[in-house]
Image 1: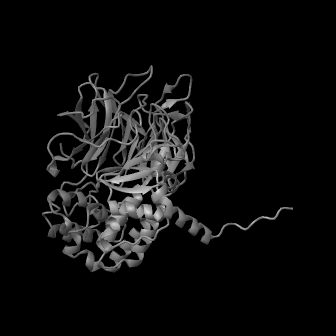
Image 2 (image 1 turned 60 degrees about the vertical axis):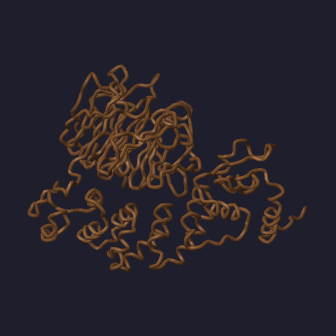
Image 3 (image 1 turned 135 degrees about the horizontal axis):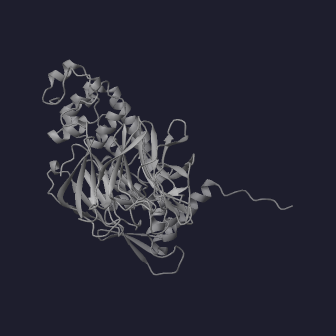
Length: 533
């Protein structure tokens, strides 16, 4: 009987990595170029250590080719060099002023082990001297363990957070996270913090959206009339709003016929045409709203941004850098915090490519491909997670429902929908997710008007009243107790993009609120009432 040799131990692996490192200046077959400076390495080693490099190399790893150059202009040279040294087993030293750039490079290059090592070092070195920097890094790069420690540090030092010198340096996403974390002792304290932090009335209004005015004493409201100018202190009405608050909201509608934009005010249900044209020359684009900005993504990888005019931006669309991949018609984009995730493809081919746009940093980053190949599925953010509903697999409609773990970058299957369908629309409200319309897997496909409700607590589905019009390739929005179905691509029962319906959740009833033969709704996006064109 053959005897098994003992496995190679850690010292052997260490010596092996050291020899690879010693020979990389001789055996290198690629150069990473950053602002005219070069880092020599081997493609095989880089590709095995990082999916980013595996995706970026133009030829298959292992093929014979002369030295390949890989341009990464957006990263710091020293940080990328430290990442490559880490891959080759070298010891990496980092100064206080290098943490951000190193974490940025490690995140973009998909080096999870290095991200973890940097986070652990910051976690152990957290103090009042670096709380601002480490908090920003934790938020920006989604290092939840470090962010939790930062928030606990702030909670244990309640006086520090109210000091103007600290508050003035905290960026908006971090302050929003702090407000949402329930670590602030009261809603009144949130108002005081927001008042110190805000540099303008517009910033104050934005932060006040995270304050529950109903829990603030009337005496405090009366003491700050410049903030609560639209609030009646004696009113018990739950719809009262903070100065410019969000008792109402808007749905921005992109008309394909006129190439103009319309605004539907909710709950007034009044639609007004604006003298602003749509930004994308190609059809079948998608749009999302993030912190005073509307982003539009074209099927040709193009990206455009419109900024709230209160922020001082000119009245126009601005082209941005293209996406890394073509995600087909109606690019499947979803907002989670300050990031826009683009996942798979909605139409025109199957894809499992994933990329993420950093709204604050204004740049794209390629992420590892998801395990589930998506096509014609609806993606939705709910509670900080991304959900996928329906779609197609090998051109067969499915009723599958999945939840994407953004940390593990893996899909978790959930209870399937009641029917197999694609091109559905979804919205979250009152502890549930509502899924409407879609194309059924019958014959060549039939557009339907059904509405299903998924209970987040029990994980079960139930059927509700159907819409008045069958719809696919449309949007569903929630304003709390109501849903809005905007646009429609109907089958034999209807036309395309010519009406809007409103669903009363309490009464389980649909009502058509807007209809026109002259409009063809290409896309729509939900914004709060403060957004100004």
